Length: 366
Image (cartoon, rainbow, N blue to C red; front, side, top):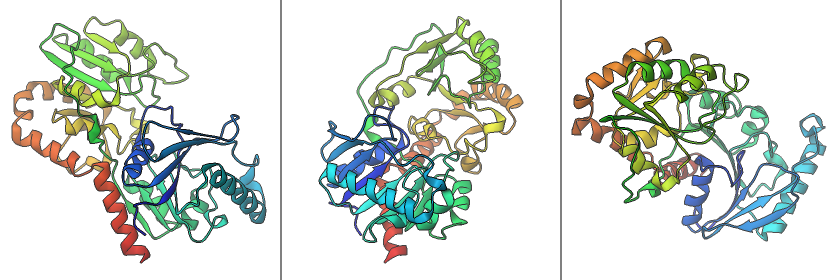
């Protein structure tokens, strides 16, 4: 089955109103190939509604979900409810779907409740997306994961499971020349959710405090959320907020991300060690690498042997690593090294990931 001119139901654990992540990008790129794509929001109390987006061939559906506690029901009742909900979505979309592409194994986890003519894809991009993994994987035609750990877990239930890296959205290019704040010559930048529970603000604060000659730019939502219930290191975030060489900017349009990243001299991320396993392959790294800038990161297993990042396996060494990167900055921005970063990112665009997925479908399901 070619992924062109098909009717595709794409199931997302994040709503369409969310900041665009992989699910949203797959939806837009599949729609560009002439597919009729229906993006299914997470269940809500809004009822059944369908609405257009600014993208051709792409609509969004709200729905109420399934019977409460469905996973505990006998299989024949689960299948009846899933089949009923699926048919209602087809009716409101006025389509007969050819493909169901799910990034969420907490819903539609009994794929065998759905028509046998459907191509059923389970695509897991978050390690903590582990709800009804056994049922969803076993009843899918093919499974994909963005880390070796995810693929290993899927393979326990479906041998037709494959690694597909995150995607790079090239439509982020812009002619914008951002004016980033600060008087220092060197700019270090992080882009992402500033209340994310995984972030380790302790080494970040240490770097900000040590390197007064560097302007640290943080771009993203939730600047003012400081709560130990959300993140155990938020006391250090509070101290970063008070530093004169730390600047916090609101979220930016996705098309402007690359321009902002290129306005920096070095990019960084640092996740708490207890979450290194969950953050073995952060989505933002491809955008970081595409900018060609050096990247200082906590340990990301999927990049361990690629020599593309400056990584510290222990967070206590992260500040030292950051200092070393600053010391060697001229060498690390060398055109050959920068081109290697960019080339890796370009080998993982969403277009190329869909092509890889298409090839795997052809090879394993023919």
